[in-house]
Length: 283
Length: 269
Picture 1 (cartoon, rainbow over the protein chains, first blue to last red):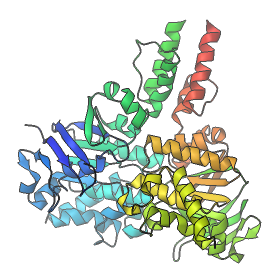
Picture 2 (spheres, rainbow over the protein chains, first blue to last red):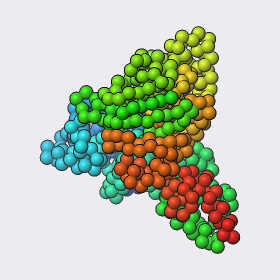
Picture 3 (cartoon, one colour):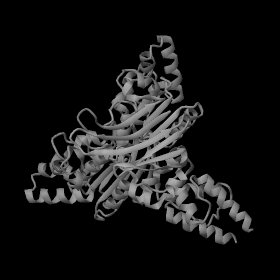
Picture 4 (cartoon, rainbow over the protein chains, first blue to last red):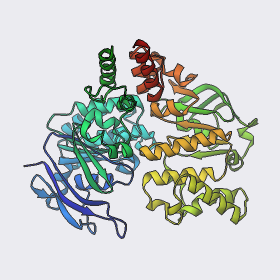
């Protein structure tokens, strides 16, 4: 049984054009999936469905459904859902509880609400403070932090719930490059059983985490497959651009200087090796 | 156009966020401000536009000490696009939001509306002129904030992470606007964590870190300083990393990298 099964999901806000139009995705436990789409393609709406924030009262699907572990979200008690799935959104300040006076309390807030034993709450809080590089600012008021610090705090609070599924909606937009690398390392180190769904408008972070890529355009899934099949499709390139490490090889290919037998690389290391390979073959 | 002398700042009850910061930015120059989260980049912007007063040192805007100029007068020269567009949008229609600035400059209703329409067209939101800004997606809201600053025709543009939340096409549009402003002689200072964006758009980079100005220089010189990259938590733009590893002339963009690589290939044949 798939971990999460989205079937023909069709959903809109009021009289606006449909945000999602017949979306179908099946994700297995432990998959690392990136859903990529331009601004307005429906990413955040889909993220809310995948994380169980939708449906909500008055916001039901026009058509289709989302089934997680064989049950629709409506059948999940809130505490059970919150310990199963966590959502990290794009605007971190909107995700702070407003109930905590310090960074440490903010991280402890979720586990405390699961009524976990005090020692375990302390342990999880310490672990996530360290993992997200927040120890030095553990006593600060969350609302006085910079945008990037808040984003790491929201991620730490999500991880403290030990979720099996984590939905990340543009999770590194506010982060400095070093912070971004730390978060990617952190995500990479999550247990293999943790399912990660990343939603983004650029492929550069996705290529470092995901092994499966979906291209969302105007609320429809147009492509689903490995990086080479999805990210190099002309429609995806026009709307997402190329990952920065792939761009040079792609331009070389367009100039006719690339060897078609060498795949387009997606990381800087792979790009260096690929350029050397093409150059050596040309001698 | 902008001159900062020995600038230092501390929030009440806190240690100095930075001190001894000095730099100048010329008219028509495009400067990127880089550094870790919490290094004080957004705070520095608030010192430049007069929303905060320096704890130490001075800021000169077009020759005048910023302390002697009321914030609303300073705003005629310096336009600021803040990090969260939601924090600077308050009108119920895009056209009113973008016309608000020109109205505050004392321009007529007709001239303000004309300027607003022009700025809205530049950011590509003409069809949303009558929409409520908060009904638009995040990228469009950012462009509303950008248009509402452009309509005031400031001589200095401060943009705090302007490409954040923008997709590929929207980023290209932003880059075109920045280039047009620069050509028109506007001073552009922007914060960005995207070093490829910095490499494409900045003439010069200021790096803030360790409570001071760590370095200032061309993107090529900043990004070739490995120790600085490490200390300031930056990263090397992809094209530069690849061109250096391949022994090619240092290239900041993929286009330059490929041109250099192809000419080497041809020379070998």
